[in-house]
Image (cartoon, rainbow, N blue to C red; front, top):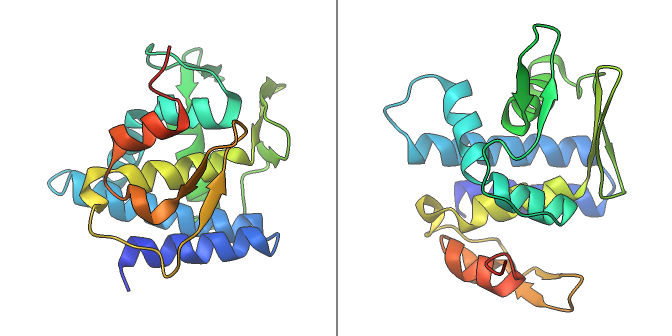
Length: 184
């Protein structure tokens, strides 16, 4: 079975079991692998990882909040140093590094069922839909065109569109069209 596909299979199983943290670990590993494939000469893991998320930022916001935009970053968060963090930095530090290095999501981040993105008192709340958005970003990334999931998972979007995830490996534009992301 394929490396990235195996990680996403595991993430889907963990989501179904209600184990969100373990699903986030698997998705984080899939992003690590995908970003290394995309930028093999970039030695800094953090830069590769954040660049991957930044490249797919519009899909992430579209899926988790229903908003579109071309501005980079589309949303940013204040930090104690006076500048701002984008979603790539927040996800890398709070989720990926927190889970893989500390064994838990950062205390400054919470993941909830609602489609929200909230910054308050130094804490960030994000929607669990970010998991699906990140999985779709990995799936539609062209460097992953030869990957597959072990079985055909179908996802239904709110506009009653069903997609088989295996049909969209490496096909970003096709996925965007299918889910309505390409429309203004």
